[in-house]
Image 1 (cartoon, helix red, strand yellow):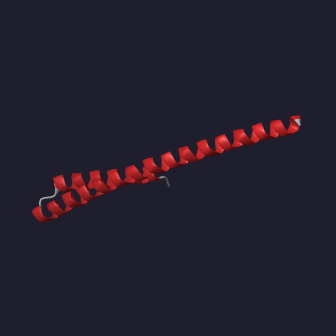
Image 2 (spheres, helix red, strand yellow):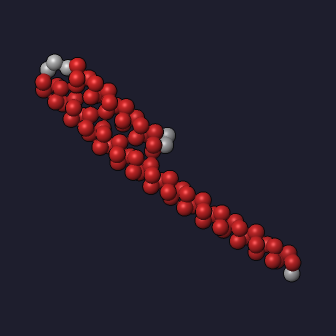
Length: 82
């Protein structure tokens, strides 16, 4: 499971809690549901940041290995010419 999938799940749970709060008649339970919804929204934001950081790290790693591979190809070509 990717971090972005987790963030999407948190958004869905938060949305469901918010809908339940709108239909709830008991004020105390309604407040708790709204708090829960807000908590999942905060978690979603956090997981979205984590997902972005992970994607950036993967992109940087890919660039590093591509440069390393190009350098190895160049080195091999030079070695074969000698």
